[in-house]
Amino acid sequence: MQIDPKEKFYRLQDQIDGLGSVSQVGGERQDAIDHILAGISALSHEVADASDYVPSYDQRSYAQAVKALTDKLNETTTKLAPRSRFQFKSRGKAAATSDLSAPKNDPRLVTDDGLGELPSFPHKNYNEEMARPSTTKVRKPSFSTAKDIAIYGQDGLHIILPSSASRATSSGRLTDLRGCIVDMSLALSGTTSFANLALRDVEGSLVVAGNVAGPAHITGQNVDIYLHCSSHPIIEDCENMRFAPLPAAFDTPEDPVKNQWDQVDDFKWLKSEPSPNWSVLPEEERLAEEIWTKTVPGEKGKDLHDILKAVGIPKH
Image 1 (cartoon, rainbow, N blue to C red):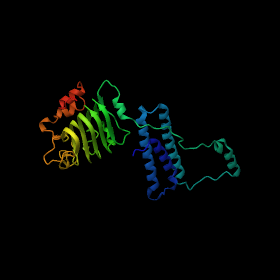
Image 2 (spheres, one colour):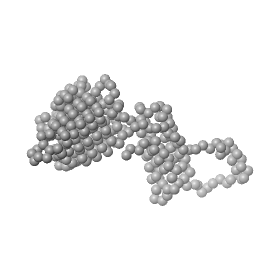
Image 3 (tube, one colour):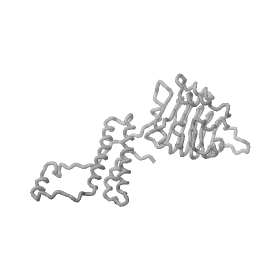
Image 4 (spheres, helix red, strand yellow):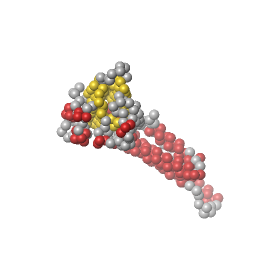
């Protein structure tokens, strides 16, 4: 479950308040301080990533809150630091009384060092952003503030996930897509993989799914799917689904023997003969190296239908 950034601020504040009760033995307190520092750093990046959709006033509020957390942590760690054995002697009762009466020490002027009430922190709607009119059909949603990839309700778009989306791989969901190219290979290559993948009602599209470590469940028709899957892909209510492994350009460190991209189970086909609803994409029809490296990533001068035609997907 994704935690609201506002809640993260308050949790970090509570952790700072609790540092005094953490033992110094075995470096436990220093570990707690390092954990808080990492949390503040991650939160700072999250606030920066949200700058294009959070109102400017709220941006300032969150930037000030990040600074307040940093100042509070510095102040707390200074107070908790071991005191020197050598101290100057007190100047006496009169001096102490004089210091207490100084304006800077007046208790009425001491302010609360808490964060106060922060504004709501809306989560970015990547699908709404992708659906906005544009002079190009290419979309590159960052998914930098998301925990998973959820793309839905898109028609006729060329969607390319950049490497920043590799942080959002707890699961992948593509739903209700028509005539789209979805290239997730850059975000899901090497050691990065989806925990699970679901394609729902996808039609007339090309999906480069990348690595899938868990189950893959698919419904739709007229879709070419390139993937590396550690379990049997499952299809249901499908027609003309064609499967192929990832090309050499997207080598995975996984053992090729474990790639079960072609061990597809059709839940709606209970007969002993092979299901007519899916097939292995013949090698001679798979994308050539030039198509992978130039056309699929968005070749200059090629529109979406040119690319779908080049990869053999009929116009929907």
